[in-house]
Amino acid sequence: MRTAIRVVLVASLVGAIGLGLPGLTPTQAGTIEAWGRDDHDQVGNTPADADFAAISAGGGHSLALRNDGSIAAWGWDHLGQGTAPAGDNFVAIDAGNEHNLAILNTGAVVAWGNGGDGRCNAPAGTYTAVSGGNAFSMALRSDGTIVAWGADDANQVTNVPGGTDFVAIGSGDRFGLALRDNGSIVAWGTNGEDTNVVGNVPAGAYDAIAAGSHWAMALQNGSIVAWGDNGKNQVSSVPGDSDFIAISGGYGHGMALHADGSIAAWGWNEFGQVGNTPGGTGFAAIEAGDLHNLAVTPEPATLTLLALGGLGLLARRRRK
Image (cartoon, rainbow, N blue to C red):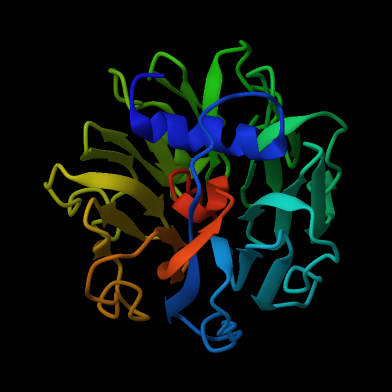
């Protein structure tokens, strides 16, 4: 582990699951702020409770993980993606386009929503991270290997890289992204604009990754590197600051969290997903959906578990 960022990404969640890895760092539970496109009430129906520890934004729906391990879901629900499963033993969440993934405290994966192409057929095993793309899913096993399932029209499933040294994953529209323990990035799968992601992976050692729809980002010593489709200036408009601690990519826009908890946003702003970004400091988590965003404002003195989705350190997005 080269940085505190990578410790947060992997060790904290594994510790929460109880797999014996050190580094569990509690964070503050808090309220959720949402902005951007609201055609399915993915913004307007955001719950007002102050006990959320993790967030994830999908195509037209949103998820949040409560401090007690239960999940809240809202927004577009035509295929059940906007309805949360029962239970209070979840430790991580991730929203795909029309389906969702979650990890139980046993390390098992639960999937629901649009089951087309087998994207909800989660394999048995013990996992530490999940990522939902457009019509496929990925998970990181506790042994550092990656498994993928669902649509394979661009070899996003069959071309999953081998190895046992992966520490983070992310999924775009039809590509997968992964971070090795040495900080190098691997990308696979390709279709149209996604070719720009898979074929232009930057060399070097990075601390975190985030996949947008047809573009991607990586965090290196607090600075952001972006590549792939630039149709909405989501790559060329990346801010040049060097104090970022989290990144998240949407369809044509990106977000990043400064060390002081303030949020930077750039790229496509048709639905206010950039222009309506809340000001101020102290935000604890960010998450970009296709065209809407979520952020967590911590409540004082409330400690909670730490899950991957809540930090926004491996966003992954998709689709249209």
